[in-house]
Image (cartoon, rainbow, N blue to C red; front, side, top):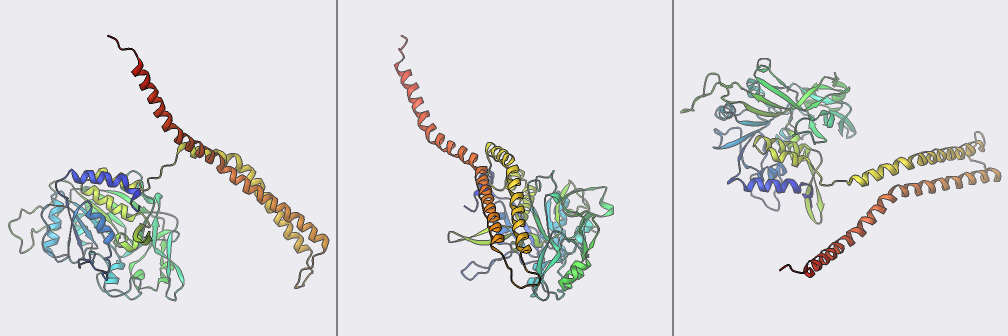
Length: 472
């Protein structure tokens, strides 16, 4: 039941998978311990991205590499870089040449990885400065022509979340926020049907000056508003958290947080292959256009930021808390050539309201709304009148309220009037749904009758045909 809303998507994916002899290969490279490769057992702690990896495994053969690996697996279709830094020279060169050959990359950079801080032994929200590595290394991406700001993080003073301050009190934290439909590209199948993407200390994305003539950057997710701006990564990292809101500088400038970058890339290895790599034909630039989907945050895709676990019929199920997971999976499906699955995944719930029912509800609401408004106004006036009488009958500077029998009688009359108005309001609200309920009852009756009626009609026609004289 937890996948009911994905029924159409799952069927289409099954058809797509059965049409291939083998799954395409996705190579995931991360400095973070994303995958839990230990044998599963009753005491096994879940990995930070088990849900994400489980979903990816339905479409891809997922191969995970550390940042010190030396080569990409053969037949890699998509490379996924999560919070990359300190890649070995050989691995960086392999990824570089993969891109020059027209390969597709998904890159999640991060000015401040909370998961990195947690895995370093500090709490993810500790105010102790983390060791080097909480920020992704933007050098490789920058040489390709794409810049992700790491010295400042985007902030939203209006749509931010509350976290616990240094004294345990809830405080607003502008560097953690959600982007709604107004910040999601309406003309991209990756974001057009999404509702909310949540970020934690995301960096702004742009093209470098020299790459603007050869690369095209299409914004997918962006932050803009009267209360949006940025704050220093150092402040967000060192704390205390109470400092972040006062240090946030609103400027209303649009900040791109996720982008689709396409075009002809230039190799980061201008001098050729690094030492130790032989028998390779070095490409100084793209031989065909490549593509990078880049996001200025890596925490946004791990399970604690995308799903919550709950019990359903005695089983543990995961429930999405935003559209982060949909966006990541749709992006990777697009890069892997599964464009037909993207719009299906984004559809979400299979609930489809009946147009007639919606029209009836709107018409009933329109007819009864004026009556409801009048009753609400009368009820408010009656309650105000009761309060006024009660105040008027009080004794000045007295601690008790003295109400005469005459005043009490007047109050009782108004209270009865208020009760009558409440009952009228309740009756009108029942009337709002009566027409829909009536339609539902008629549909149930028709549903019960139409089957036998059609069967009877078919039998009658068959009987007439059988009795028709045969032409010799």
